[in-house]
Length: 301
Image (cartoon, rainbow, N blue to C red; front, side, top):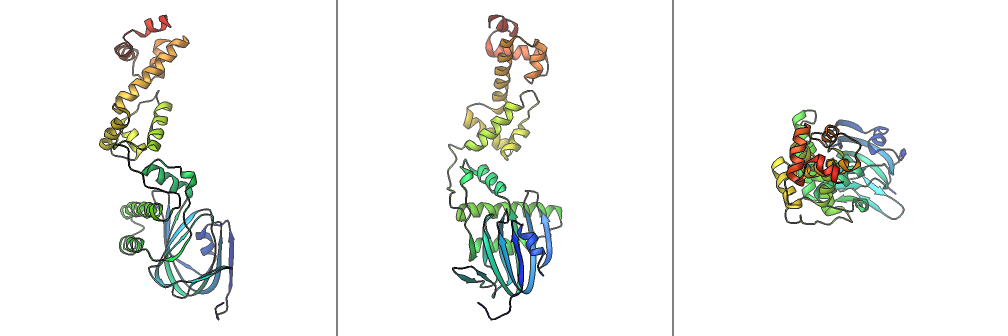
């Protein structure tokens, strides 16, 4: 144990790290909610304290900015010293830790949820994201994270809307870095022939299926895949052998054919339920595709 007298800090069981720090003498310099659903904060502590975190329910990335030479992480097996500015800590959502705080330390925190990490992994590639497991890291030296935090994120005006958009992008970059280097069940997989990843394919196709009775634009579908319209259209065609418009039209016609066999709805109702602007437009498209009119198709089935 250290020779300074510890003040018993809060035992934060299942409380967010942010709330736990708020119960100490730590001073919050700035905090912001980011557009990508994460949040960030800069804290300054000059204290003698013992702080406990237990199952905070979110992931926390910490970058030391100033001080921190005398802080220690302690548990029954080990005691690790802080080593000063630039050191990185990663605290997963289910972790437990105790921190012997002694003297001044200034640090930046990035808070992000397990769901956000899984979503980000899925957007990059098809992945069994339920098995993702971030490593519990203490006082590591990662020059890439350090440089991004100190040289890119810190100079930004966190209250400016434009800078907050840039900060959101930077936080995504940090999380991708964590996935690649500090996630025990994450492997980089190459895109198949430049097409959409299987995870994105499923997401787009599921949206199309539940929206066939509604107008569907290329912009909508591209936004679901989080791609530009140009890149989405190109990658969709590589994946499915046809353009998004052709695919949606075929799915509308397949739905219409099924409704015709049920003999429950009028042709005008089927046209609307299948997403066509009018009965005449529906009839023309149906005959072009099936080589028979909707009425004749219904009679034959």
